[in-house]
Length: 65
Image (cartoon, rainbow, N blue to C red):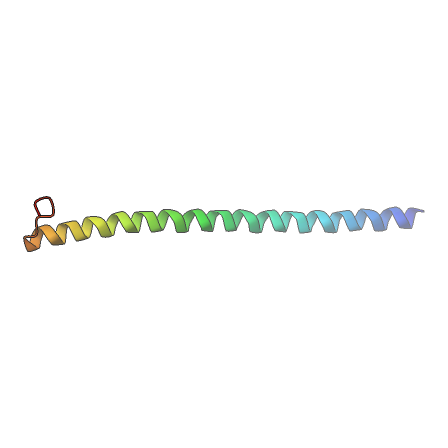
């Protein structure tokens, strides 16, 4: 009976370790997705600002067609 309890305890320890690693991987995935979204947004704003400056320097006035 004691051997069975020990085996069950070892099984639960193994499952707990697996659960922790899955949560850790999910945390990294979530952080990576947020980073990609923020980087894309900042890049889009930067490109829009750069194009606006370029058009202004070249003499194109986008407000008066």
